[in-house]
Amino acid sequence: MKLKIPKFFRSSKQKVTAPSVVEEAQSIEQPQPFDPDGVRYCSQRPFPPYRHVPGVTPHPIRDPQGHSYGLEEDDYPVSLPADWRQTEEYLYGVDLFNFAYWWEAHEAWEGLWNKTEDDCRLFLQGLIQISASLIKYHMRQLRGLQSLSTNGRTKLLHVLTNLDDPTGIYMGVNLPEFLTCLDTFFEPFFCDTVSEQTYTHVTVKPLIHLHLQTSV
Image 1 (cartoon, one colour):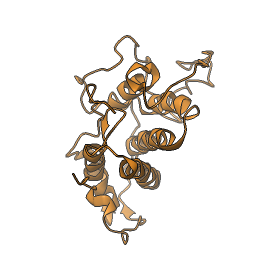
Image 2 (spheres, rainbow, N blue to C red):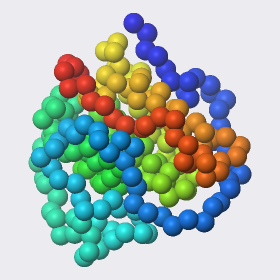
Image 3 (tube, rainbow, N blue to C red):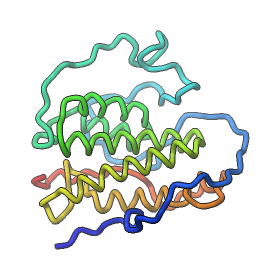
């Protein structure tokens, strides 16, 4: 069975350009989830009291008013990718991502990224960069969105091409489906003109759906 490669990666001639952007003054509010009624994979862990937006809300770790200020990092061994179903921080990161806690998801996965190697490390880094690109999406920072979304998808594609499993599922994520979804979501931001309507007219929801019954 041949793996389907998302169209974003099929042309080596595609470039990240600097399109003309219609800048519209607006206040930056809290991100809102694309699906507020979505499934949770780590429901025993409560969400933070706010979604961090850099430069807008208190830094969760550095600011005494931050929602994670003073919390010590857990120094525990992990066995990834084999035990992803039992790795709470991974599942919690997926919940954070799906419910628009993109900065917090970045932090949750970064703790695991520091403890992994090879494709697992690359996979987590790809998720981290996609999460960071959605913060840029929320903040209307186009250049950061373009570079981070491109780098993140490139890493996820690399993991996909290394997979022996013809389904393309890695740590519960169907990579062909997820990459195609990301391709569709980010593609409008690489057009010559990007306006506020580009940000508000969302045709797909960039969410992570875990396949809990798979062997990979």
